Structure formats: structure tokens, C-alpha cells
Image 1 (cartoon, rainbow, N blue to C red):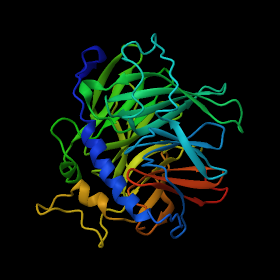
Image 2 (cartoon, rainbow, N blue to C red):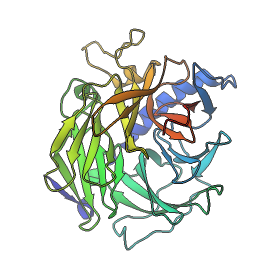
Image 3 (cartoon, rainbow, N blue to C red):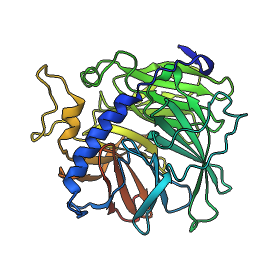
Image 4 (spheres, rainbow, N blue to C red):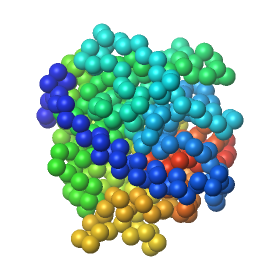
Length: 375
């Protein structure tokens, strides 16, 4: 187990590559919808104009959804699931900050809203109208950005205030984050120094999960979680275990949460390349992703390696999956065939019987009715 202290974290910033690559994907898909079209496709309708909503979380006890912004500002967007509209939540004109310097003493200050890109999200309710939102941040610095979310009532609009950050160890690019009740964090790093996407898709170990202790103010690499492209991460309700989606292995693995951090079980190979991972109110794990082996799209370069640009630039079918942590049974919540204007699917959330589906490269999110039985 490798220990990193935030005080000695390197200033190496690698998020320029993430921003540039995701921008290319976003522009590629926005070109397909420049004719003022926002027509649905298959079972999906679209909410258009929202840039690269890579992850989605529901504001607790409300109909509001917060979306990350992986390619272009705004870094965070607010979705009204009832009226099917969205607006910037953290942007150059909307960026309230109140730095909690006692809790986040090593954080240098609020992020620049003109350069901040966000990736994986997690939100923890405190039961008094306040929740804490954690967002993996890129652009200008590599950090977990922390926000207070306040909502006066279910019909009120959430107010967002940046309160601090946790710099990632040695400037590593994190992907997803899961928060613990004591303020500690788990974060995945899919590609550690010197690793690449092609190696991960061939089954090479390229990254791992890291644990940040709120008490010690330091990061530990969880060596037992090393795997090909560690992507989404989620924690059980009782915090006895956590789960990681591996894009390289196309599975989900459960680990004990404690001193050992040993693996407990892994699913069989999933029918998609899983991305983000969240636990819903029923205790089920939800993930989503694209079908890798799709005849109309060739993700392989001349060397026979899966190349990220090839994989992401061709529209693919997607599936949203539900995983029961007790039985490891996997079921398909929703799916769609390849759409010319919506691909690169990463996550889904159900709010009031409507399923919302995000993407790391696009100008819209999809939604459809799934019935009251699906939570």
C-alpha cells in the first residue's frame, strides 16, 4: 500500500489530454444535431444542449438531477426532471464559494469555472436540506471538488456553494469518487503513470482505487484493487464493502471496506463496457455502457488494439444494467440501438419513474419512462 500526502502532491496536470479528447467527441456529436433537431430515437427522447453529462446524481428527496460536464463548461448542470429543462449550475456567472479552510486546509482555493471539467459524482445527504456533492475535477488542477447543495423544499431550486477540494495524489487523473460518512473518499484512477487505454482493454492492470483519509489528510493506493481501467465506484449503505466497475474486464468486483480491502466476488463478463457505478435507493448497483463488439464499428487499430478515439467516435448500442450485490444477478433496465446523435453512454438514474441516461461525449442526454416499479 503506497501512501501519498496531499502536502507533497505533485503539480503535474494531465487533464489537458482528457479535455482535448472529450472536446473532440463532443464536437463530433454536436455536428449531428446542428439542424435544430432534438427528435427522439427508439424509446429515447432527448434533452438537448447540455454538454457531455458524464455522470448523473439525484439531489436527495427532490426531482432535481445534477450532471457533470466532461468536455465543455458549465462544469455542473442542473436538470429539472419534471419540466425537462436544464440550466448551468456552476459556471463563470454562477460560482458561489465559501471555502471551509478548517476541513480543506490543503486546498488552494475555488476552481476556475471557465476551465473546470467534471467527471464522476457522488452526493451525500445530511437530512436537513443540505447535501455534499463530490465531483472529480479536471482542468487547471486534478482534484475532488466539494460543494454544499442546499434545497429548502422539494419544489425549491437547489443552491450550490463550493466549499473545498482534495488534490489527487501526484496529480493523477481520477475518474470516479465515492464518499464515506466520516468525510473520507474512495476514488478510482483508471490509467496510472505510463498506462494507456489499449493496454487496459487487453486486460493489463492499468490503475486502482485510492483512499483518502479525512483524519490523516493523505491518500493510500489500495493495491488489492489494481485492475484494467478501474472506472465507476460505489459504497454499500452500511459501508462494509465497496464496488468497482472495470472497463477493461467488463465486470464489477466487490471489496471489503476496512484494513484488508480484499476482493469478495466479481460478476461474469457484462454485455457492455461498464462506466460509472451508483447504488440506488433499493440497494441495487446501476451502471451503463456501450456494446464493445458491434459489427458497424471497428474499435481496433492496425496493431489490433482497442483505440479510444475509434471506440468513441462510432455510435454504438447501449445498455443500462442493474446488479444485485447479494446474488450478483444482473438485469437489463434499458437499452437502445445505435443512434447517430447519442452514444458514449456512461450512467443512468431513475427519478419519479423516468430513466435519464448520460454520455461522456455529446450535446444531449436521453430519457424515457420506465414505470413506477423501477427505482
